[in-house]
Amino acid sequence: MKRTALLAVALLLVVQQAVASPWLKDIASAQKKAKEKNQLIFVDLFADWCGWCHRFEQEVIPSQAFQSSTDNMVLLRLNTEDGKDGSRFAHDFGINSLPTFLVLNSDLVIAGMIKGYVPSTEFKRTMDDVEGKYKDFVKRASDEGSISKDYAKRLSLAKEFESRAAYAQSETRLRKLLGEPSIPAGVRDDAYFELALTQILQKKFDEAKKTITKFGTLQNKGDSFERSRLLIGDIYMQQGNVSAALNEYRSFKTRYPNSQYNRNLDVMIPQLERQMGGPRK
Image (cartoon, rainbow, N blue to C red; front, side, top):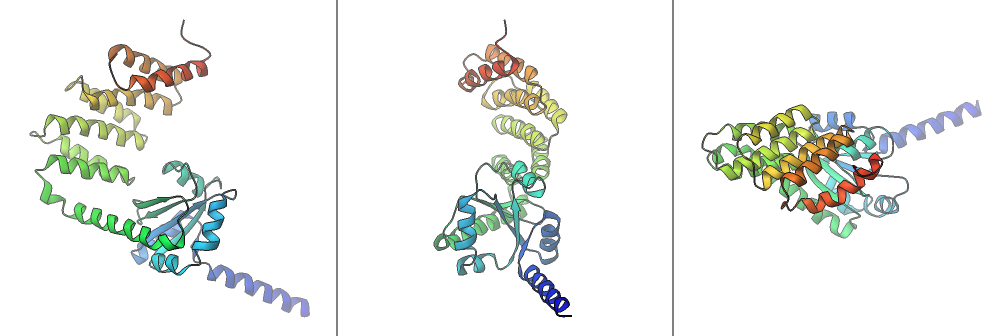
């Protein structure tokens, strides 16, 4: 009887601790809660070996600055080495240092990103800045109709959607922009590059190649065109076809001997050659 009572108390404590924790541990639950409450999601990306992550957890999370700044947000903690949601987030958002904190909307569009440890004395100011910039972005997006004839601003907004990982929304805007008959050549060229890049970020490699090919029927020089040609090599690299990427980069150097990007290729090509087992004979 006594043992049963002790087990009941222990179970009650475990349940209370689980209920008391405000942190969710999977993306689906966080998105669901954010949609229901129309809230942003604060994501703490960490790893067990990260000392600054532990310091943030011990010093900043209990602070009033953190509590007040995230009071109206869904809290999500993800271990970037869990082989599940955390690892996927680290890959999808290009996280290469820890701690990193993301503020996302319920569709996982980036409202803001904070890299590195932020002490509690600076945390509220940093979060206010993130939220302020995101609100400005949302306002500009909602007023998009007012810039219908300003092609440069429309391109800039499409790029911002891309930078916030809203790739589908960016692609839609870039396609619409490229359909404008009076679009200036400079804006057009940049939009073609951005469209191909956005498609690559969505793993739509065949569509990206078609975009670059179409761009090539309109332009054969300039910075945007050269960058778009380099994207073909990047596509091959992502597909694991190192040989095709290597041939593409070599071909680029031959075709554009004065390109500023050849400095980068001079570093990349020998590395790829070594990966392939030696330079081409």
